[in-house]
Image: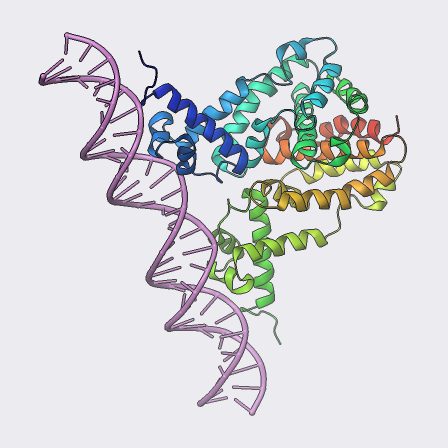
Length: 191
Length: 191
DNA sequence: CGAGTTAGTCTACAACCGTAGACAAGGAGA
DNA sequence: TCTCCTTGTCTACGGTTGTAGACTAACTCG
């Protein structure tokens, strides 16, 4: 029986990961130190390096964890014939007032000032989101159209969640969908 | 006669300010050090404190300078009949490479984690950008359409300058303009 | 019960940060 | 030419950062 293990590698690792994710979302990659992250997990700073090798590797694992979670750009959504309508609806729904934290985007944004974090973030976005989207949007300028789709998604997130523009936070979801759908339809079809 | 003054307080102060502005836009407030800023101005780190008192005061002065500048969203541009094409061209041109006149957006964005710059940023965007855009885009859902225009502008900036997505950084400017113009045209006309 | 592996801590280091004070050099007026 | 203020550099200090190595405590297995 191990009902109360005082030494649990799995739990400690998860605690460090959770504390790091919260810290990165709050203050960015450079804004939070390994000592603070470790303190939030109830351990010493050196445990970060023991479990993850370095702060940069820890950040990469946080990003991987975020990327593995379900997002707007699921395979099912992308390959559906009414992709434009689906992504508009999902984007409006997910960025609704304080429903989901979506700390992943905040982490990317606030950590972008660090060169290390920016490289990690760009590689993950290119690998997980942009590549899949480019394949789905066949035709001319597919990579550029995919990138613009991602830009609109991120822009709506910034205006609605980071800056909390009242025109978007207080808007009728149906109106927003109606405004966003033609934009995505425009980008889905090849020029 | 003072044709080539080797000691010029005004020029040195301006050089420090310019270097700081570029540094803050590139790496964020915490990401750039006073030594690096001073080196960009061709002086020593201590000149920053001599001219501006502290790094924080220097940042405040950079923000003040940005706030005092005219923006792209001038009334003349917004009320022009080909506004959609103008803003698309401007956006592509401005996010292209080197020094950007819109670096204020990047500075605000990257400083939104620790400071109260997020509040300042929202107020400024609502007061200067969003209000003017809403008035120009008359018709139904004008505030929402204006906000989406700003969202696309910020999204392109994030993807192109913050995350440096290669599909956008390496893209042909003409192609990007051709992809963005119909989006803005869609938003300019009332639904 | 002893040995070995694992989980965790402690101390320390080299590098960087913002900043303070003392000091050298240029420039203008007497 | 002497003097004085301005402009700039040099050295240094306390603090924090990420990380490395040695060490201790706990759990497991033979």
